[in-house]
Amino acid sequence: MNSGCYQTIQFPTKEKPGFLSWNPLKSSRLNGYKIGGVKFGNFQISQRREDISTRLKSMLSVDSVVEMEGKEGINRGSKYDAIVIGSGIGGLVAATQLAVKGAKVLVLEKYVIPGGSSGYYQRDGYTFDVGSSVMFGFSDKGNLNLITQALAAVGREMEVIPDPTTVHFHLPNNLLVRVHREYDEFIDELMSKFPHEKEGILKFYGECWKIFNALNSLQLKSLEEPIYLFGQFFQKPLECLTLAYYLPQNAGDIARKYMKDPNLLSFIDAECFIVSTVNALRTPMINAGMVLCDRHFGGINYPVGGVGGIATSLAEGLIDQGSEILYKANVTNIILDQGKAAGVKLSDGREFFAQTIISNATRWDTFGKLLKGEGLPKEEENFQKVYVKAPSFLSIHMGVKADVLPPDTDCHHFMLEDEWTRLEEPYGSIFLSIPTVLDSSLAPKGRHILHIFTTSPLEDWKGLPPKDYEAKKELIAEEVIERLEKKLFPGLKSSIVFKEVGTPKTHRRFLARDMGTYGPMPRQIPKGLLGMPFNTTGISGLYCVGDSCFPGQGVIAVAFSGVMCAHRVAADIGLEKKSPILDAALLRLLGWLRTLA
Image 1 (cartoon, rainbow, N blue to C red):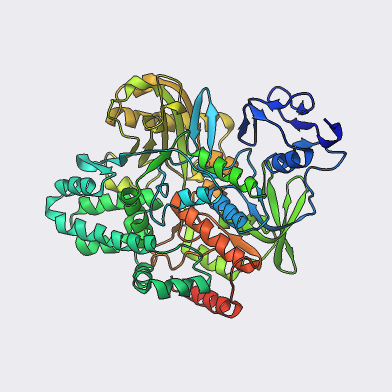
Image 2: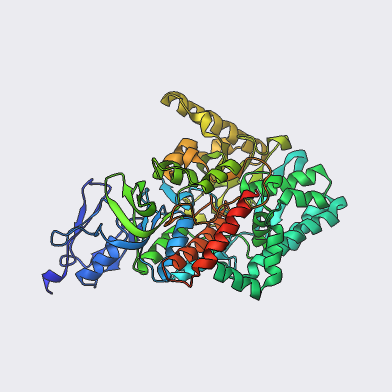
């Protein structure tokens, strides 16, 4: 074996703030270590130095070291087709879709693993989902299974567990409703609660299905790319006209056309609140139709090993395509060159350059923090007139003794005990996920995970001394747990063996989201999705992706945003067909439509 063909690779270890050194001349196996969220177990090395370097440097964090004859592991002056700021689901879908089209992509992630609010963390033998465990878009059929498609595009597939109940509602006036996986079972249950509203229930959800079926029949790409858009219109004119009809409409208005019972209308508000953190009158009908039907068409399917595996798999697939992802890479500035986005600067001073920059940060973070000193483009001014930051959450991750839960406990619950008016108030509604009901491997034997979250504004946590901050966390968490104990699980408090509480400040710190927000919500009753911006921005070469872009919040929505963004960027860098004249006309039209909101 020629030692000149191999290299010593150093990895950071928990025991040593320096590095673990490993040389394939001395050992051909690298066992049990994790690098950037990727565990190496029984990993047989049989590659030459060039292959090892290419593979490993793509997944190492910025401050990891690759020793190779005195050269840096990554050429920081290299030119990429696209740089993606952040590795949330929207950013990773955009990155992987571009990579499979042949683009060279660099993803820069502030944290040590990918996923953002769809990431994970581990404590004391538990694997916790950071955010929601309700996974839409993860089925094996249709065109809206966008997570499945994104993974397949980079050669990845995940084992999933079907969830028989999307959510179990516990609502005022002792209204209990299970949203069964089978649509007919759900509708029958809902009509049994409101037999006098049978016709209205069928008509409202029937309109949801019109939207879903129209979306599901289309090949989903960028609505800002006219060649695709016109092609879809000529192939599926009725479906496109259906979506155009519902684009400016809200779920609450349509519900009120068919329903009169105030408790039923409040239930529709709760349905929409899970989708968008606002009531039905402020939830675009397209969003409602997409989510309220996908849960029955493809169903909710939980990935074995936890939600964090989705982002990890996408990141691995990105590397397989020859692109790169760097962790602990905190972007502080977007670099402009003669008004065009040309690169980014990290907190440690490093700079990277690309043809295009895609921000998976919120639009508030993108234009308020990453573009320091730049005037706010007119389009962003209009966006901020129509939308405000949705509140953040107080989250509680707990490990509990398994016997505190009844054997038939559902995975997901939504609880509002007293007054419907508290639905949107801070700490009013409680979301609860128990993913170990579906996948027991996430917790030690004889234990369950409870992930509890309730809306909470950052303002409630500002200016508190550390001691008062910790005391307030415990006080509010205690109140929330007591409510769950009283309503659902007697003996819950005494069964707790692990508890960790996060506030909006926690979400802001680890997810780099302004005010800890989970996306935009309209200031007042909107005109559907008319005011929601797409992926292009008022700055040439800069694109946005994620929940502050069309179509909004939720896993399936941000994945859709990623697909659309990748298609638009690919057209702009010459990897897809493009018509500059039609582009300009369509973008002006879309800009004008947004002003109507």
